[in-house]
Amino acid sequence: MSGANAGLRRRGGWWGGGTVHRFYSVVVFVVLASLDNVAIGLVPPLYEPISAAFNVPQRLLGLVTAVSFLVSAVAAVGWAYVGDRSNRKPLLMVGTLIWAAGTGGSAYAGDYPTFLAAQLVAAVGLGAVGSVGFSVVTDLISPRRRGLVMSFWGLSQGVGTLAGTLTGGLLGAVDWRRPFLLLTVVGLAATAAYLFTYDIQRGQSEPELAAVLDAGGEYDYRISRADLPRILARRTNRWLILQGLTAQAAFGSLVWLPVLFAERARAQGYSPATAVVVGSVFATLFQLGGVLSIVGGLVGDALQRRTPSGRALVAAVGILAAVPFYLVLFFVPIRIDVPDGAGSGAVVRAVLASVVSEPTVGLSLLTAVLALALTSANSPNWFALIADVNPPEHRGTVYSLGNLVNGVGRAAGNGLVGVAFHGLRAAFPPPLNYAVGLAAFQLFFLPTGIMYWLAARTSPRDIDDVHDLLHTRADRG
Image (cartoon, helix red, strand yellow):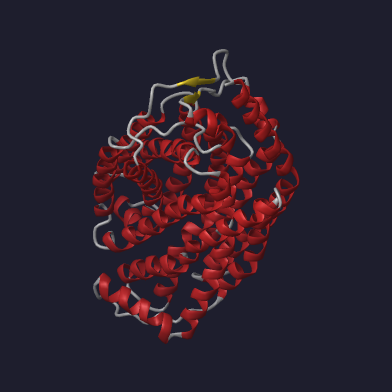
């Protein structure tokens, strides 16, 4: 139990709560989860023009992305802990305003240190959106549908990353500052949208608490410092948190996909501006397999109803089976045929047409879709497992701890792969150095799959413990 006065108590009533209002609130939270990933995906396609503007090497822009991942993850722990103890809505609004301010500052930066500082400010605000927002969304989802709904939550983040990649490459091809200005305006609009959402009741999705909450009670348990050792003592939590170190090392390296395909375009004689657009469009197309995370969520829900190990097993199989497809993707040669120097629209149309007209592009797209579809089974089942094995007042904090380790892994993957590209350049000329480096980093998925298999062994007992705890609290209420 958390806190001396914690418990299930009577509440005076809901603010709002009608079907339309609830739907609107869910949409706002999911959309905002995508916007923070738009901010994350915005910079990598613009490494070249930003590095030219500030007269710094591209690897220093990779460092900005890597450090931003880490800062955001560290900040998320503090945001989540406060969110698990208090009203979550104001925290989300403040966090959104902070990342909007940092994004706007990035647009007006006149040198590299100022740009780095603005990006770090944005990263602090981004930490609130994912961690506190996750806690809110889990209180809307019944355990039977957690995989499906969390696939939309995860998908919104993937779509956000793709939108950031595409927006950066297309809108920023001529002026790299424009995408940052646009995102700042969108962030301010998102803050206004928060004003009209309602405060979702903690624990409202739990079947064990339904009778008490329907009778007007309130789940008033809150996290305390004494709970932190218990959270880490929960065995499944340990595997869910640690897997992010290796998984995100692999995922973090994938932010360089636009650079790989841009370098392939440059190797075939295209101008830098056209190459940036080509790289962004190819990277966006090749990540469309992430949409199939919905299938991973559905399969996880179905298997979880048959065995309490189901979600972890789906994630383990998906991660391990994807590795060969990634290795093929990076080495399949692609023949790029686009009008050099043409506008972004003409280049995009030519790339889309090549999916059908150029066999190497079609094969690469199929391989990428399969790879992303398999690895995307990880996301919804990871989200759902955190909710399954933790009581409501712990979920935001556990998510943020996992996200912190994810951030370390992703920062390492994003930063070290840049160093690897530079080191491999002596033996493998561009773009082959990018292909070899990315392929090597996908091997980090192997220990990730093993950790999910271990989580499949520990999760049944941890899920039962949460059910028993909530039943006991409901009986006391």
